[in-house]
Image (tube, rainbow, N blue to C red; front, side):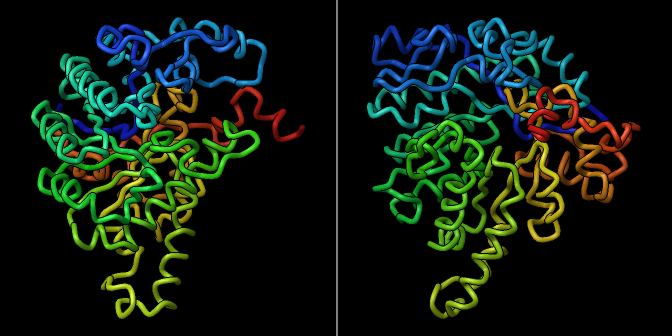
Length: 406
């Protein structure tokens, strides 16, 4: 591919029901599997331990008002909601073109909750099956689809071995939990051999929304946790960032790369400023042992993805455009597909061509070492299309006007 235009750093596959067959054959009902517990929700991920995860339909509906009668009725359809490109690679490439993008970095979907399965052998085998499955999935389009593997972080020796295997399979990074178990927080130097291995292998560690090792991103339970879990999940991510920076993880491992995914970015500048003030007022290096401000470690070691977050873009001078990567979240309920170019045109309107190029092309190519030649900012497709700025994509969302007016 000679011309590079726009890359999604956060897209997904949605694991089909048959994906779980090898696990069911080995573990029976204790295996993660898809089943219908509530007919109104359609097929849901059952973790085999009494916990029920998100419904398949929630990963397959786009651009809907989830409170509408039609959306609620559609939940029952489950996998029937899937876009053609979800499971047909030829169709997926057509949908990339429809959305104005040229490549995608792929995360899992239903496996997010598997980090909360207590049987470690099941967790290991689930991720092993997935890492093979995703390798086969992307194989027809090696220059358009780039896989992330997944590993557990309880048995670190096995995690390192599986990460090595992911590297050999061509995966560009691995997914790990965004929040650690309470008895093994990321401040614990017990993880050091894993951090060291990821650094040596040059494998970015990807921490996605909903992937905590505990419920609700490690946050206290709420009366309606499903409502707080997504919008407030960034609070759990903020704790993880603070732990990794303040405990010296990225001082000890200066080339470790961590990607905070799908929490949007408007909160990051505030968190970094608070960490910097605590560092300065607390005595700096003299008391913390860290020679740099927390925000400097962020700029060197972290990345964050965004979809449709103008607030984060407004603070890009502090967050750093070199740390930001855009993703369309295809084919999930939060996805901006097939309106990605309009969304980018709106939220990056005041950015320079160089900034747009960083966030839509350069950063993701450099981080994951994707096989594209970096040119100048003039290659960025963003903002080339003449959208009517009075008709924003957000205003076109079903239920948007009603939500604003009540």
